[in-house]
Length: 508
Image 1 (cartoon, rainbow, N blue to C red):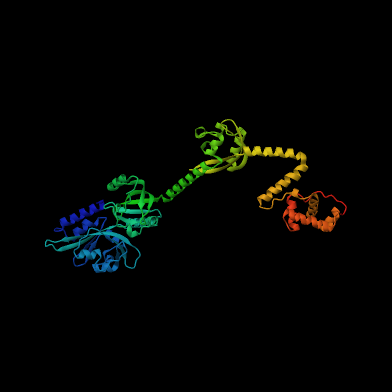
Image 2: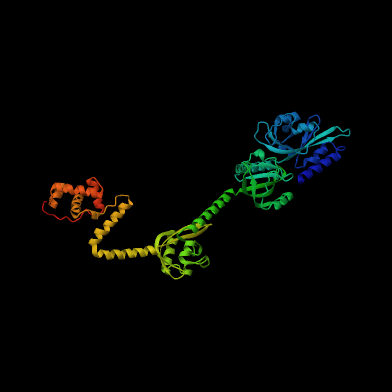
């Protein structure tokens, strides 16, 4: 009981104690100084008196403005319950006390008829009886709780509008009395599936990380610390949340405000990250090309695949936690600085030439690529190192061979090119016809044809008759497997015959 209620009780006890000896004037003196509003009503429905507090609570300054009778009071003031239900005839507290009813607390909104001004009163009744047990004086004691009601209304509006999921439960029976839209949206519950159920029926802490602590704190009415929990949803699935409880007063009752944070997106992200990491590790280890992962800052190595270990001869014990400078991975410090600085500056590099030193001291020609990646929130570098030592050696051997054969360029151009042309024909599925199957004269005819000469011009250039030219062309078609001059020209150009030397001679 608060101080105001104690004062009311003392005043009422005083009233009861002197009711047999005191008159109405004495009663007025006793209650006039109370901060609670007091109205005295005669059993004949006349409003005898009201103290200043009661007048202020109705926005009037005198008893006449309050109404001389119960009926007049009902006409001048409109009363509603907090759920906005308007009180009808016989439901007003002043009418209920007239019927001899006593009540400890009724909360109503009071407004002058036709006026927007409104107060919230908590009202209780007292019936004073005479020696014969008949009602002698009827008393309404009222407390202005307008500010409290407005604060609760603001809290309710904020509670309902807050997107953060929340519920309110009474500590007396742990029954949930309020739930906001944020919780309904997060879980998929309907409001009627929540309100009226207990905390244990809804299994709020059934799978909480600190279930026993939560139950102990609830029993004591103390704050429940934040903890992870899994809520059973109406669709049969579970949702991971952070749950906490904070004691509050709501509607004059001791309650617990439960707040929630949805951790399901984080759990899904963590699961996706874990699966992605597993897939990366599988691809990383199975890749046939050498790869290592190092920190961007300091370039410390913390992962190397099997291909890299096989290529360099290092094992995990010789790599993890060390930097390329520690193991002298590159041929020179200048190479290392060049590669690392480019990655730090541009975020990566592609197909850079570098030499890698193996554990045994050997030197490998490599193409190096790198890219910055995020590994569990840390900035790292993925290095991809392709060993091209054998390819580079083959290139050098090829260059040497070309330089050797180029000493006899005519042989190279006439024989090697013919072989390459035949190889191409085989790869494309065409007929593998050797250029050497053609006679020298046929090659001359075909060369002039490639230069756009007609039969007459070819005959004049080679000293032949037109009939002889046509005969040569017919044999050429048969040997190379074509039936048109255009196809023969393409065939000859692919084999380097378009500029073959032409020896001019007399017409035969």
